[in-house]
Length: 199
Image 1 (tube, rainbow, N blue to C red):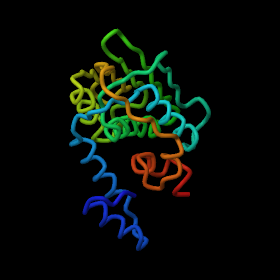
Image 2: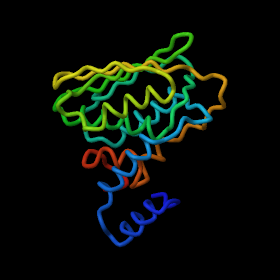
Image 3: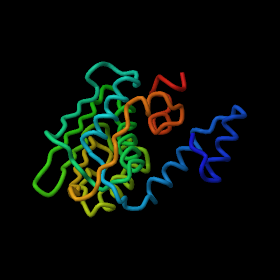
Image 4: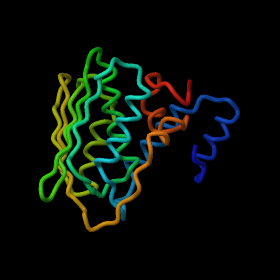
C-alpha cells in the first residue's frame, strides 16, 4: 500500500498492526479516482483493459469464459487517469460477479476520432452504488460521453472516449502488479472474489 499521503500512511500503520483496512482503502481509492485530474499523458486503453482482464481471469473464482474482452486492432491512446479507469471497470465487474451465471463482455473499437467501449453484463440492481458516477466521470474527464441503461434489469454502458494521439503514452503495467499486491485495485474493489495476494 502506498503511504505518500497522511490518509494512506494511517491505513498502512493499521494494516501493519493487523487491522482489516480494505473497506477504508476502498473509500479512499474511490475519492482519489473521482477527484483525479485530467492526465498529461495518455493511456493505451487496449493495453490497460488487457491487463485488467488477464488479472481477472487469473484471480477470480469463476467458470472459464465468464469474461470476454474484444480488443481494438491497435493502440488506443486516451487521456484517462489509470485509477479512475480501474475503479469504474472493477465496480462494474463486481455487479457481474454478484449475478449468478452472468457473463462480462467488454468490447473496444475505434473511430477516426474516438474509442468506443461497451460494457455488458450484470444487472442494475447489483451495481455498486458508485459505478454509474465513476462511468460518468470516466467519460467527462476526457471530453467524452456515456450512455447507461437504467433501472434494475440487465446492465450495459457505452462510452465514447476521444483519442489523444498527440500525448505521450504511459507504460502499461503488468498483470502481476494487480495480482501480487494485496492492496491493488483488484483486491480493493473485488473483495471475496479474488485469489492471490490476500489468500
